[in-house]
Image (cartoon, rainbow, N blue to C red):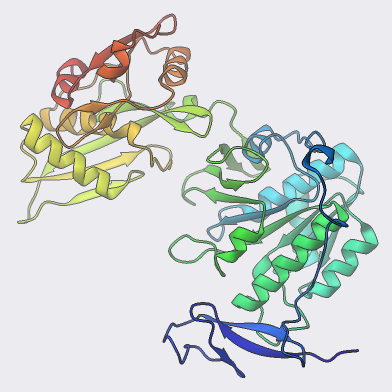
Length: 455
């Protein structure tokens, strides 16, 4: 047996050191030193795995894209692109306490109940008794779900080979450590080594593996960025812990569309899927309240209607405050400047607060016009028409620019009972037929949109 030793390599400049160092002595980068295995001859002793015997003609390769495993949880299926792909490696991240373990234990129970095949849930953070208590609360009753508390990578792979489950869930990847490395669990080298070994094992055994990942203070998944490159799918579970709604968002998916979102409600019996989130987000809307406008946004292939609220109040300080919740802060500053310069609103002595109801985070520019109308409505103390939805991006010249998938947005607005919708003027010139029951109102500028929207 060939003995191996470890060395530390800087991921930034490639400098090698014989011992662990917090800062690279060559480039001065902090936290860039990664532990790797090296054989006596100098070659890195990483696992060498092959998935085929040699080059193959593309036309001769048999694609097995139809072998997806569908789930009774429709929102989870939507985010994955139509089901679980055997041999795939999926990373699920989210803030502590957001519901990652609850959702994946619920998914494991559903798979075991519907297929009758073994499913393995590996936990490195909770005891088997704690998992059993959560399973009882989720009303999971099946003999095909296996639970093991383990942090050793080699032991986890042995359990997987023994049971050969249909799906394996590892909660979490930051607690898993390999006996081949001396670094502590959760370090960059351990996380990368565990993810690489699990990736090879999942594809070699054709077993779908889900990894739970911790997040940093900035909201990114802890560990090296290469962790997101290794896995096939990256999902983020988002939401405010003080709200019941959770959003499962796909940011990378090798087997389906990205930017898809699934909506769940956290209840005592687990995650309950919300098949019509637009109605949920608008359920508590106060009609004819100044400062409220309805934006039609796209989350992946789904259209969502959300309430955008704004409040303008005289400031008590020399510099007015700008506070954004659910929208990008820089977009709020841009829209406030456009309203001041192009529409003539007096906002230089007003504190402006913006909020998206339901804890949803809106990143696309198609909600710009709705936010501008909401701010104007609060400033003028005039409500927005109750039957009006708003679509459009705002430019620095005060123009309203076109957005993608206008017809899909109009269809969703019409389905929820809205009879009018502000759309960009360039879309109106194309004379695309609006859905039955809704009238499209083309606008060229923010000033024109404010005049048509306010009652």
